[in-house]
Image 1 (cartoon, one colour):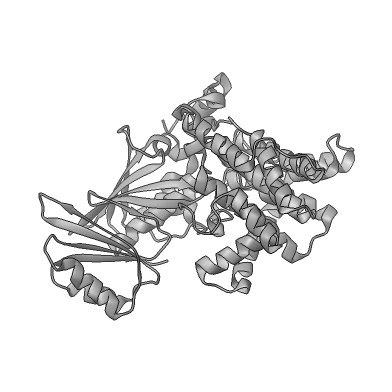
Image 2: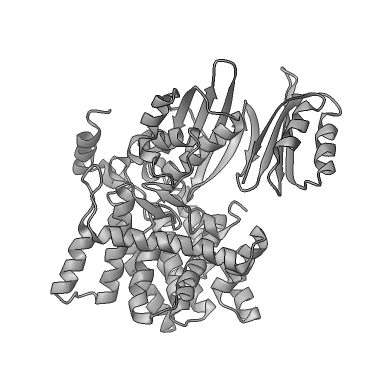
Length: 220
Length: 291
C-alpha cells in the first residue's frame, strides 16, 4: 500500500501552497540531505513535467532548498529558504528538464561538496508523501514511511551477510530489503527498511564492515 | 487493515463501531502508539485548521494578489442578508475558501488530503459544528472518519492533481467530508459510504488547470464547490438516498478517468482555465519578469 497512516491523509501540517510541490519537495530535499549525511555546498536540481512547469508558482524551488537545509514541511522559514541557502554557502541551480519520466512530479538532485557527491531521484506522489526511486543511478524504492539504511558496497560475496549479521546482533528487524548492482563498476547497493531508527554506533559498525564503502541512514 | 470502502464499512458494522474508531484502532496498531497519543496528534491538526480559519477571517492576500478576501466578503454578506443557499452551507463555503486563501498566501495549513484541497474538510467541520454542537472528541473523530475514506482513495486511486486531476483532490476531499458529516450527524457507516460515493460521482472528470500553475485560480473556489457538495450529499445519504454505483467502483472510475486525462489537464498549468486569454494574461503579468 502506498499510504500507511491516516496522518498522510489528514496532514502534514505545512506551509502552503501545494502538498505535492511544496511539502513533498521539501521532504525530497531533506531525504537527499540525510543521504548525503551533511549539508551540501552545491546542488543541481533537474525538474520534470508538472514540477518543471509550475515550480515557481508552487514554491517547489524554495521547498527543495529548505529540505536541503534540513527544514521540516511546516518550518516558518520555508519561503526564505533560497536566500538562507545562499547565505550559508549552498549554491543551487534549477534545470527545467524535458526528458520523459514515469511520474509527473519528479526531481533529480545531484548534491555535493568539493570532495564527493550523490545523485538521487525523488517523486512526490500526493499529499506530501514521497518516494526515492533512484540513488547514484541505482533503481530502488524507498517509501520514506520507515527508517532505512542504505549501504553502498563492493559486489562481493559475504557483503550482505556481514550487514545482516550486525543488524541481527542488535536485534534490528528488517521490514523490506533489496539489493541492486552495477555490472561495470562492480558496485552494489543494499536498501534496508527497518522498524526502528538506527543508532550512530550501529551505523559506524556497518560502515567498518568488510566490502562496505558507504552507509547512510534515514530516521523516521 | 482495510483496503476498500466495503471492507471499512464491514469492519464497522461487524464490530458495531464507528468508522472513526476503525481508523483509530488501525492507526494505533500501525504506529504502535496509545489511543491518547494518536488523539493528541490529530488534535494538533485540528488546532492548525482552526487557526487557519481564524486567520482567513481577518482577511489575507496572496503574493500575486489573485486570491484573498473572499471569505470575509461572504461572512459580511451573511451578517447583512439571508443567504439563499442557507447559513450553514455558506458558512462552510466561506471557511473552506478562507483556509485555501491562507494556503495560497503561504500560511500554515493542514493538508486534507492535499494543500490545494485543504479547505473542504475543515470548512465543513467548523460550519456543521455550529448546528450539531459536537464535543471536542467528536470533532477529532470527524478527521479520523474523513481520513479513513481518504486512505482508501489514496491507496486505490490517487489524491494529487498532477496524477489524477482536481477530481482526485477536491473530489476526494469533498467525498471524505461527506462521510465525516454523516457520522457526526448520527448516520450509519453505510450512509457515510453512500455520501462519499454521491459526492465523488459529481466530481468525476474535474480537471486540474491552475492559472499560471498557482494553487489559487480556480483552486480556492473549487474548495467552495467541494464543501457545498459535501453537505448536500451528506443530507441526501442521511435521508436514505443511496448510490446506484457502489463507493469502491466510483473510486475505480475516478482512477481510470484520471489516468486518461492528458498531462495538460493535470497540474501543469497548460490547459483548461490556465489556457484562456485571461489565464494566459495573468500568467504573463505574474511571471513576465521571471519567464
